Image (tube, rainbow, N blue to C red; front, side, top):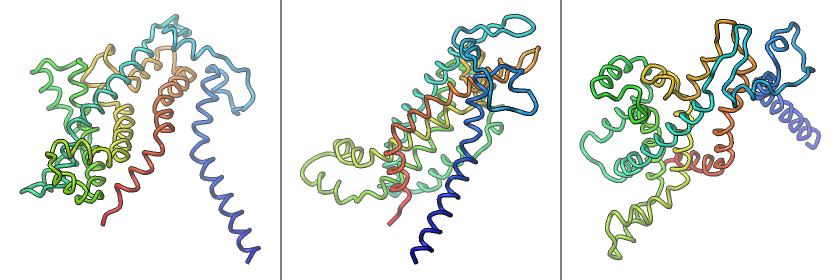
Length: 285
């Protein structure tokens, strides 16, 4: 039995190592590329040994990209700030709208309630190209094209359904008897919602907010069509590295590292809430 258990541990360790290598090697390779120039990146065969350079990060931070065709102005840091602004404001607005709506869907049964909830969820599943043409015409009519308010509004198609369905599942797992006992003591609905429901659902709300932030941060197509370069996030701003003199692979890799870092740090900081919120919100009964 001891030999079998030892063999199982060895096999399990090998399988886990293979999975980690499979998922982490592309990230590791991009990190190495961010410290190389194009000649080092494109050499055949590739090598793990090279003379590192900070030129790619310097170009991003200073906004000056040196190419064979001359110097090129890039606005990566402004794009990074746009991503932070759009994602944060979109998630905050989605939380303000989605958490009370999720509580209503979880606690109250009303006509067409499930149909309305599923319709909201379908916006998350619909391909963005399906709504881009009517959205562009609608935004042009309301003068919302190339505005932060317009982008935050359209980002609700990403954030709001996600928050609504995750937080709804978490509210459904909380026993309503706790809220009933609090209301019997003379407290109103709004105070019960603030003092009892929201604190108990905090892990689920944190998990939903984190996932919504990541999806909003990674969005590409909405900002590409509905905003100009001054309002576009980092996902669209990366197109500036495809120049007439070639593709700047080193700068693209450095941009990926810098753009992934905020969401990675946020996920590491909130991983306890993420695991707890998603696991408990997924259990019914």
